[in-house]
Amino acid sequence: MGYLESRKNIAGSACGLAGLVLTFTGVAGPYWPVVVVGLYGAGALIAPPERPALPDFPDPSAQLDEVRADFGRLKAYLADVELPPAAGGRLTELTELLTALLDPGWVTEILVQDPEGVHTLSRAVRQDVPEAVDTFVRTRWWTRLAPGQEAPERHLERQLTLLHEEAERLAAGLRETEARRQESHTRYLEDRSQ
Image (cartoon, rainbow, N blue to C red; front, top):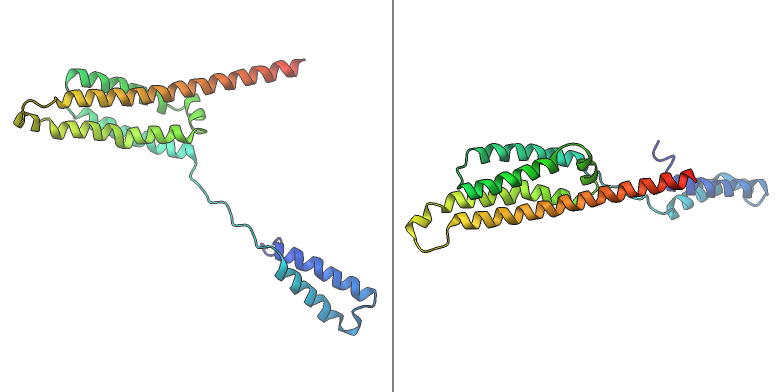
């Protein structure tokens, strides 16, 4: 069935019809079947190739569902880690913001249209936060062996602050996109009512 709709068949059929026209005008003579088949074959050969099908990319909302599942596992991991109060507070602020960004609703609708935002969230959940916390957990006891170095708590606090700022920028961008969308819809309704 696919060949019937292909460019090769359409071009060959058009050339074959031209062969039938030549037959009915008397140009092809007794060899008309060879002329029609030959023109069909020539048309099929000179037809442009078929366009390749577009790749089937995963649905961005499905990608967000995977990030949500990974975030659930990350929160379970973070619940088992002991952090100093200051870093724990920063981490709580960050996880609350990430929870709000990953909540289904209008944020998801806008986020699905922003691949950079999805990547930022995915990287924060799957790489940045776990690495920051894990590095702190692994290096904490080393500082006792090498006094005089900057405390790993300070590094963790700075890392979590930077990640929180990045998530806040993402949230601000999403709010701005939603505001523009509402303005556009308002203008549309105003124009329609005139």
